[in-house]
Image (tube, rainbow, N blue to C red; front, side):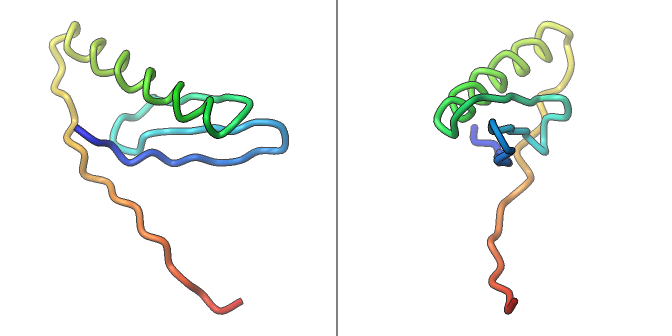
Length: 70
């Protein structure tokens, strides 16, 4: 399964979250690190949902880049 992940760059770090998995977030010092950490966070999140007998949300979000005139 693939989930859309939003990665944001801060002043000194990167953050990531998964729109389809509320509460599933990660932060890291580099883009590469935050990608690794959010992948691990998704896996742990899904395991937790399964253990609690909750449904696994389907991946329904998508990403689109839009060109705009500035």
